[in-house]
Length: 163
Image (tube, rainbow, N blue to C red; front, top):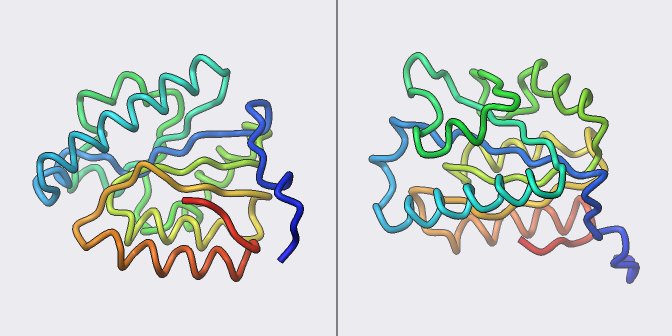
């Protein structure tokens, strides 16, 4: 592992924020306190992205069945909305095209169901982008289990990252 931590420095001019699947019909699966914390964190990230000129790409997993982005975030997350049917965003060609169109190479990832769609997106980002960071996520399984596996994978693929 390289000691050069500079490769992990985020640059607002190179970053894009990806908000993954914070959708209406996923909310009941989350404990209310966890969902509210996630929603507030995502709202803060989107607001800061706007202040820093960081584009926001939002995904919705099968919105006909799962619903759209929750109303509290929908207006703030409407810059680019990608409908998908694959769990990982990188399995959706329009997502990869939207990322490429931003001209950004550092991907900040947040979202719901971290152990499925967020995790699959991070896996799919390998080789697609120079850098991916994940945070502000929620899931229906204990976070400690997910965090262990995703940190192990990211350490192997990118030489370490803080989540």
